[in-house]
Image 1 (cartoon, helix red, strand yellow):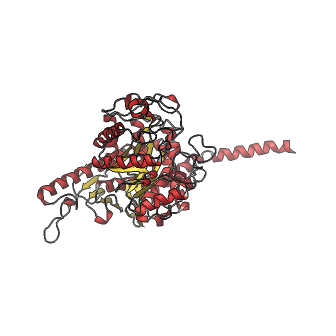
Image 2 (cartoon, helix red, strand yellow):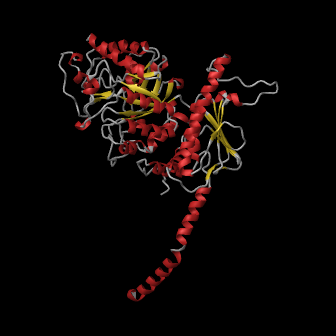
Image 3 (spheres, helix red, strand yellow):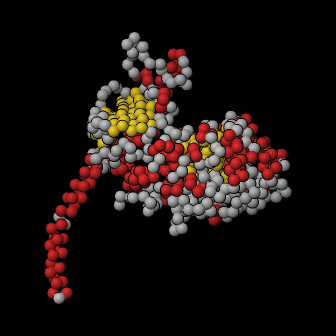
Length: 566
């Protein structure tokens, strides 16, 4: 019976295939076209906006679309014939100052418009000219918005005729562009022309950040990452409104920045890495290039020179920095806590002063990170004495010190502590941090079992470490910075940071595998109001990012906790 039915089944299957195959491409094309035609809802971006009102018809980009740039000085006069004051509250007063402020605003708005056009032109194929001429149509970028938007907030109004983006400062305008970018189809990330339509959903977004500090750290000491790799990561951070790049520039395995007064730090101390590779270092020109590239995307670079521990690369480079006058060999392993600067040696402070002076001169941002973690080879008394001498040196060069949370043993006024503890951190250590916060020390939160991007997702993750436990996507997202540390006032939390240590990674692809998809969630914790926090809604928004990352060439981890579309 089975043999007699087989030819019949084969015939039926063939007929079904013959009738189905011609229809499949057309059906797929139609489904794809319908998906492209539906604009992304305004509330489906990451980080979640503070306020969304969906209304009206979408705006569609066309070959005739123009980008119109405006500043506060462009506004029409009021009924009495008075134009708005030129410049914001910090832009000076008087005609000369006002004119200078207006010129700066015009330049900054133009720069953001150029960035938007550079993003959109390849995929759309549209010319998208930039103009300062008034008009009712097109994409409008305006500096000089409501003061309530602050330095990083923006307002996006979308209607059938125009999309209007307004901000007080260029950073807010840039962040608003990232929202526009995510509201357009993922194909906009392509560098070759793609089929449209290119639509923005109608409505209004009003958006401001929850925290002033939203950072990501890249360890370039365990493994060295060249300038192009750092720039690539900066571009990825900017998409999610991260505003701080913390570069871990020195450790036992390598010193990564040229210091003129101590040249062997880079020439010799930078000549290896974990596993014995060639290492490398940034010249001062390299470092300046990174700082400029980050600044153009409204990220501030926070450089870290770790001390008094994690200093073997420096100690190996200069025998005179060792208490016994003998330089240890360079180190290529991954152990921690075995090295220490010689706290009792006056030459140590000459060294620290020279390094901080040159680093401050290179760094326009307000912070210099001086490390301070895992100083197991430094006694508590020596640690406190060291930090009490070094923090004033940072201040002497016009900067604020940042240190890992162990610095709360002796925080100077203005020092920021970065908390990296986790669930197994002792109660006394937590109490010390909380007490410092109550006394005025600001905190950046980077709990290792939530925010450390180098932790494995699970036992099968081929990269990363697991000393703080596994950190799947939900765990990295599902916590509230304002309530994370008991006894810490909410106003003491300056923000959050996602560190990525590089013991197990040495390429951009490996970096991205650990950072994505966890990084956007940590960016959202730093930007979005606590009321928007919802795992089920977030994982749906996160799933939308997958096709965008594929267009961008990002090597992301396809977490089973996220409902990826394919």
